[in-house]
Amino acid sequence: MKNNSIGNITRARLLSGAASLLAIVCLSVVASVEARLNNAAPQQTAPVVPSEKPVEQVRKNIQVLNGLPSSQLIPVMNYMSASLGVKCDYCHAEKDGHLDVVSDLKPEKGAAREMIKMVQGINKANFKGNPAVSCFTCHRGRPEPVRAPALPLAAAAPLPEAAAATAKETPPTADQILARYTEALGGAAAIERLKSRSMKGTWLTANGMTLGYEVYQTAPDRIYTVLNTPKQGVIERGFNGQTAWEKGTRGLRDLEGPELYSLRRYPDLFKDIKLQGQFTRLGFGGRDTLDGKDVYVLRGMGNDGKGERLYFDVQTGLLLRRVSSTSTMVGIIPEQVDYEDYRDVEGLKVPFTIRVTTIDAGGSSTRKFTEIKLNVPVDATKFNKPPAPPPAAAQTPKP
Ligand code: HEC
Ligand code: HEC
Image (tube, rainbow, N blue to C red; front, side):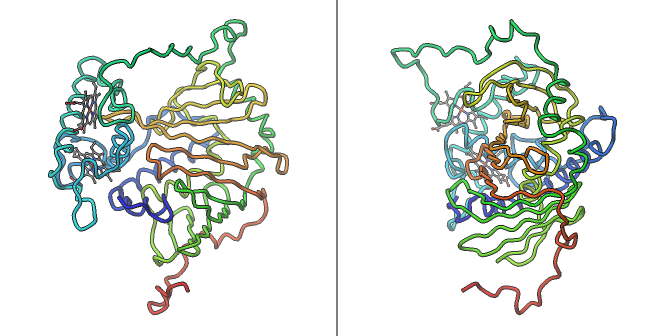
């Protein structure tokens, strides 16, 4: 695939057609999380995912990934690419400068099919069907797995778990760690008072571009963002609880799939603030270090069915990292969010840097804020999709 000028935004556009169903899933997952957040008592129900078509029903040439939810196709493709350290065109032929994903011209695609079957067979026969062995287990970022150890052998690194430290202290429970996090943020009362937030700063894309970035949000989930790109001008995006939209050089259109996810997830008003009630299971996962800081790790399962790992600073109690993993038939796909530079804003601690790291390098980004305001009035009409411009003026090119 060609490198795009504004990284993941355009990338997501390319893929949005491939994952239109994801929109429905995202919306319903977010909606169900909200439902839970608004309820005092956390519900222990199974994730509510509407019936989603398997990929073979929406794609032309699926022979081995039968039964894969269609929203997972592109994540799985990104996962296989990352596991082998290759781009899409390693397996997919190109036609007229575009990927011809349906074609079986390249032998690597056939090899990958055999590998997918092999991985499924290994996991079925040995690991109760859980994705214990994946492409990455063997490939480690290369097309050809290493066959023999290189000499001299490096000494095995000690396991991260600081067993000695854990042995001395009684490990805290998940509830205690979450309660301490609430306090560290400023306390439940200050969190309950949070009704709106506005943030200004920059969005650094995976390919090194710095875009101007503004976010306006109100509880529970309304959002309006402005991206200032050097080449494509201003891109506005919004969600008013029903419709997600974008207005930019490509005109006015609805957002779905990964674009909608990316618009809403990272600056989500409460997702990383009110953690209680978001998990079906959550337990103490040991003590570790992260960038030289001691951290407590919580491990669990989110209500959306994703595996979760949360890393809390032992000293401050603040959340430093959250890793959500989607389990698929070829492997476990992680997505990591790091929270840095916490500062006090109106009695709440707010991270001024949010770093998102995904399996496909193009999806990673760093959001750095220079100004964050809480509970200032936000004009609710900002969230609504603007009226379509008259046809003549719609595509006026920027000078
Ligand atoms: C390691 C090889 C490999 C890589 C790398 C790879 N793919 Fe695939 N892709 C496959 C295989 C194999 C299939 C067919 C799966 C099946 O038969 O069930 C496939 C199928 C697809 C399909 C469905 C096509 C159809 O209509 O039947 C799409 C779309 C797709 N890939 C996109 C991508 C994109 C985008 C990338 C890069 C992010 C990518 N692939 C990277 C091996 C690969
Ligand atoms: C158990 C280890 C193992 C796992 C798991 C595994 N592979 Fe492989 N794979 C290999 C080995 C070994 C080779 C090299 C075979 C050879 O040299 O003939 C290979 C070769 C390949 C090739 C052909 C490379 C080439 O140069 O032609 C592709 C494509 C591939 N694997 C994709 C995958 C994908 C996609 C997955 C996950 C669905 C996967 N592999 C999982 C061990 C593995």
